[in-house]
Picture 1 (cartoon, helix red, strand yellow):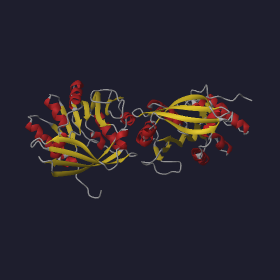
Picture 2: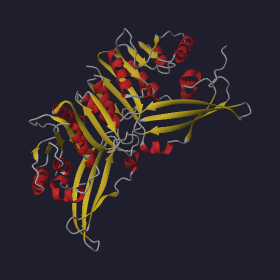
Picture 3: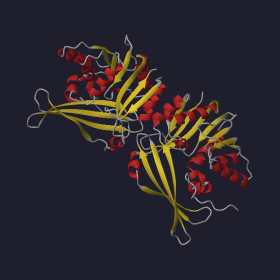
Picture 4: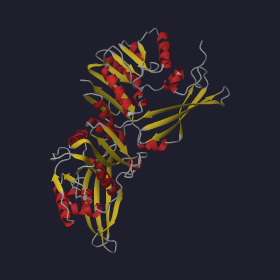
Length: 256
Length: 261
């Protein structure tokens, strides 16, 4: 790949067009936030898909994100929904918030943007510092299972198809992935296609992103080495145990 | 003369040491590698899980100040018999990787032939790494290798018996065939191996089949780095083979070196 494409986070309206409709994880985060019994911080909150849902249900939640365009869109959406969102622009590896939290959330593969052990540990240590004693970091990552690694290289995968919120016409997101098994990394070319009523592609938006995957014991060791006192990994939003490599990774790290 | 050992009583492959040696006789890559490392060490060498002395005896014979330990007394007995046959008297100890405690400190500690993979939990792995690090002099080195299964290999082998070796029984001289059925628990990173050992009679018919079962844990690259970090090592490196090639997407072996500051 010779040209460098923009990150999807530089086009928040396109990002939302495709990903705003994803709601499968929202009940989990709301339940976690309500059970926390205190304030929540969402790290890498993006355009507020999760954060605004929490605020709408009365949770005392703050957010942070590295990308100003995403936060701007979040602010606009909050205003439109009559919500007051306290968010700041900050790096997940070195942020400073004025208060301490019962829970720190990193939803929707946000942690995959820490691409080295050093970055992963800086992020987790920083999350830990922002926890009250007894509090926990909770993060959701896709599990990089066998089927994922065995997908044919360079194939274009339809990730998501949704209806355009205004026109009702299809919007499709495709991912063309390069996988580095030893480095546990994925580089994606993401294409969002907007179709017309006749099914013709009328607009294409192209982005590039890279992510770093983690395995279960690796994630537990990251929590251990970042100073957490206890940890647990579950396999899905329904809190089932992690049993298969088609499950999700939901990791909890407690500060005692 | 002792009666020929049958594999009948062997739930573990380590309870029939002479048969174990026959099975591994053709595998030399790591012996030469660990032998060279032992000879290059600037001080005493400790071999963890030394078994029947596949590496330890040649190193001892080559004049290396090497000691070893293994948790399986039958393996150590076989080692001592082989040593006695060659007029050698190496110092070896019965000890578990997780609990070993010797008075001496070493310049090099090795764990050949993927023995580290017998440790099935993170806690066991960390306990063993901590014990081994304690046995290193400042500046000392831990050297070990692990297999690194490819997803293609897992997909092809999972749940299906595969022939792995045919050999002549070291004592009866009759043909023996080995089949492994591997079952992969992909989130717990454990492969359970059921080994069928089919012994033929003098006419070439399958006379009896014995089963061994054992489990091995595999560890991913960054996971291993975090284990070494958690165990207190200061520096480490990994290569993709005994020839020092870089570790990459096609590597099926990880050769780790870790240093105590």
